[in-house]
Image (cartoon, rainbow, N blue to C red; front, side, top):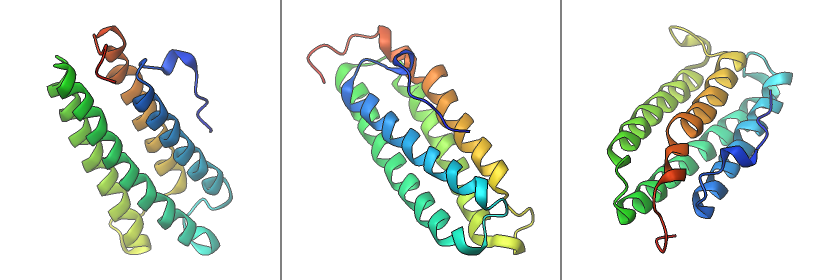
Length: 142
């Protein structure tokens, strides 16, 4: 299931909204691959590995950028956001490790499970945590 960017998802800070749109694009690319490769192996394994690597790298860059903007603005929700970022980073890392382990994992990762995780991870974080920034004062910061 693809995620569609809506104006309601905008936090009102271009750099962060652009990052969110890029993350959505990466998650949607994975969803397309997952539809044709439910066990994450075979001909799409390399594409999944590459996409997860790009997602992990871009997520780290985004979280760093977002926290830097929040810190510069004296944003009150920075601590909560950092905690969410740490938990999300850890969860993503766990999923990537399970993917890397393949069928030898204690619980092999399925495309459906990873797709559901990525979709809820991204949308939940934007809606439940990041949208709180919409009401904060970031004037002149970004």
